[in-house]
Structures are given as C-alpha cells and as structure tokens.
Image (cartoon, rainbow, N blue to C red; front, side, top):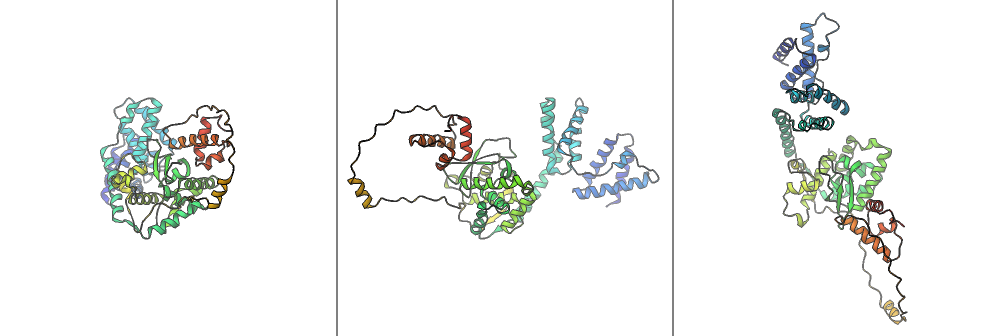
Length: 431
C-alpha cells in the first residue's frame, strides 16, 4: 500500500470537517473505489486508512467520533426491503433538488460496489420509487457512463477468459446418454443435471416457475415461466427427451424439493452437475452445453439461422448480446440430441384365418343410430395446439361413448396441465 494513498486520504478527511457524516463517508468511499479495483483490496485498504487517521488525529480520544467509527469499506448489500426503504428516504429528501440523480447513484454505489449488481439494483430501486410516488421520470435516470464502462470491461474480460478456456467434452454421445438417464431417477443428484441438460432452463425455472406443454412433436415443448425478461409469452423449445418424460422428472424433482428445499440451492445444483459430467461446472454451464448441442444438431428448418440467432431463440433472449456466454464449449462426437425414443406401435396384419372367419360370418343389420346429442361448445384457445388436441380428444371420447376423465384424456396424449386448465375453463365438462 502506497504512502500517497494514506496521505491523500488523510487530507480528504481533514478537508471534510464541515460536511455531514454521510457526505464525508461517501467522499472517502469514492476515493477508495477509484484507487483500488476489487472488493477485498478496497475493504483491506479502507481499514488501514481508518487506522492511519485514528493514529494521526484521534490518538488519545475515546470513544471515537461517530464518523470515524463508521469509516470503512462495507461491501455487504442491505436486505432487499431495507435497500428499497432507505432509497425512498433519499428520494423524499432530494425530490425537489437537482442533485436527486447523483444522490441515488451514490446510495446505490455505496451498497453495491460490484458493478455487475449495481445496475440491476438501480433499476429495481427506480421501479419501486416510480410505483410508490407515481413519478415515471425516475425511470429515465441513468448511471454515469464511467460505471457502465466498468461493467462492459468486466464483461469483456469474462468473455475473453471463456474464449481462451474453451471446455472440450469428448465422447459427447455417451456422456449425454449417462446424464440424461438420470431423468427417470428418484435421486436429486441425478434428476437435476438431466433436467437442465434436457431442457436448457435456469435453476429457478426448473425448481419453481417453469412448465412444459406437449406438442405434436414429442421433442418440442411450449415453455412458460421464463425469468430475466419482460416478455412472458410462452415459446417453443427443443428438448433432448420426450416432453412427457420431462414432466414426470420435473414432478419428481419438485416433490423432493418440497420436503428438502435446501437441496435446490445454486451450490448444490453446481455440485450435482459437476459430478454428473466429471468436470468443474455450474448449472449455468449446463445451459450453455444444451445451447451448443442444439445448435450443432438443429433441424433443417432452422438451417438459415446463424449461431447467435438460434441460441438466443431457444434460450428466450430478447437479443444476441449475451450469446457469447453460451458458446464456450466444444462437443466432440455429438451425433444426436434425441434420447429415449417414444415407443412406436407396430402395425400387425390380420392372419388369413381370421380374415376368412370374418368373411363367413353373417352380417347383422346395423343398429339404428341414436338421436345425435347436442353438446355445448368447449371454451378453448384456438391458437393453442395442445388445447385444440384436447377438444379433439373429448369429441373422440363422446363418439366412442367413453367417460370424459383425466385418465382417458391422458391415454389420448393430453397433458395433465392442459387437462386441469381446460376443466377449469369448462366446469361442466368433467363426467
């Protein structure tokens, strides 16, 4: 640590005698942040600066003045509710002042020295203020350009590290097959990596928010529950196993987490993924592996898409700016992304004996058809493939004189989620 840092810090402290405690602390913290990069260095040197100021100015004074006692580089963010509440106080204090933006920026920077979380926290605070005080102009506030430059610099460094440290997975087919097999397991350490790899969804999307609706293609799902986006419209995603297998595994996983929620933390999920692949990976890395695999084996209909376009489409991103974070894996020996083929029903031709026996039988005159029953229309979304299939299945059951029940509808490949939704829309439909 340089003597110049201590000297300049002491000078700033002595020149700030007429300022309030908050203004003095903000000034010193800003000086430390500009001098040192990295939270640990900032905390360490801020503590040494505090000790130096005490030695020079407050050697024989006890207790210390409140402002020197509070001096330090705290990088621990407050609780979400406290952060918003304190932000309201600053807004009320400076709402009629031209320095409102500067004060809010200082407040956020003080509690969120990490540039990666500072911007998202500032956005969260702006939305809360705009909602409470009905002031939409707050939403137009921006962080200073130098703070954005710091974020972009960190992103560029992270991307360059990923590009230079590309992870290679050999014998990808066998590795994928071993991981995917865990989707039918009752153990969370096998279930979780399998679901992430099969669907490419985030940790919380798998454990809480996501749902997968079946389509005509067994390996295509309509995904609902996307996080980190303002657009909540469901969209189609490819899966590595049939969607009905995904839903069964998802039900098992969430049942386990209901009893043991601690097993679904990001730390544990990363451990599960690392053990499954035999590499040091996180659950987000598994999402990147999914994106790379799906692009390499994309259907011919998407051949015109480049890598950034296709990956952003299946991951639900609004643009292609974050795609480089998902292209840091090289998969050798990948020939397929479709596992656990759904069983096909072989066509059996009737034997000659059975045909001859039927031909000799005396045909009875057809029974008179009963009067056609008139059923009320089924309320459904005509743009939803799954809901149209549900209506067709109900009509088929009616024609065959079979009971309209959840079991019979599931035999006709209507998903439980769709059945539940349609019964709610049509209360009189269930028999």
